[in-house]
Length: 270
Figure 1 (cartoon, helix red, strand yellow):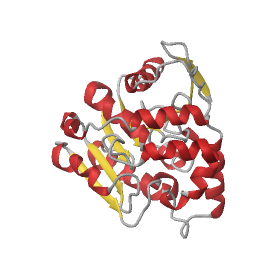
Figure 2: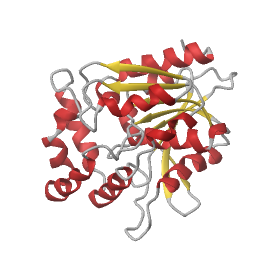
Figure 3: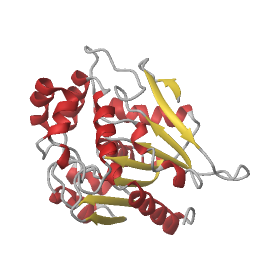
Figure 4: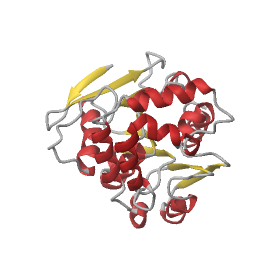
């Protein structure tokens, strides 16, 4: 685990995994996790990806090993996107392939729309154009009443296919989420739930892969349609019957789709 300091003075954590050939200038694959998660949640993706890419995993501010901003500090989407750009600057990475899960994908989308030169390709997993058209605001009173772990435990079937995954994964998933600060998570979720940029996704010009949970309970599958209609260079795949957290439930399938997409588009990692 490494750390760097953002321009507003917050310490953010990140990890690098690189098992590429040492004589090759390997492309960077930057991974951005979901709300209530951390970079650790990509643990099962890393072995296959890191043989072909320099894999960088960021803990978003207020998550995982990154510092929680003071309660009085304003939280904005622009600041969260700036964190990603500043990590890239810190690592001297001009542009990267970006994987974004749920809220992490929101940051990837914003970076692709507003700083196109920094995004070589964008791969979105369970990530709609903002969270406004969802029931997310209703989570906050439940989190306040039951705690993060209690709230997620009651609604876990919306996130993981319980009949398909190891029960140990479910408990680990809940424990990891419980490590986050509930007040900050509430603030983060409400921020994301205030946005809908579905009419703007046509500004994403890079090759884009959108992977849709076929039984999406957070919002609806229809919320992904703007990508199909508006993004010029997009491929869409649906995981039939899958709830929201496909990155945790199906890491091997997700990783295979990433390697297939990048292999066909950029000729590496097939």
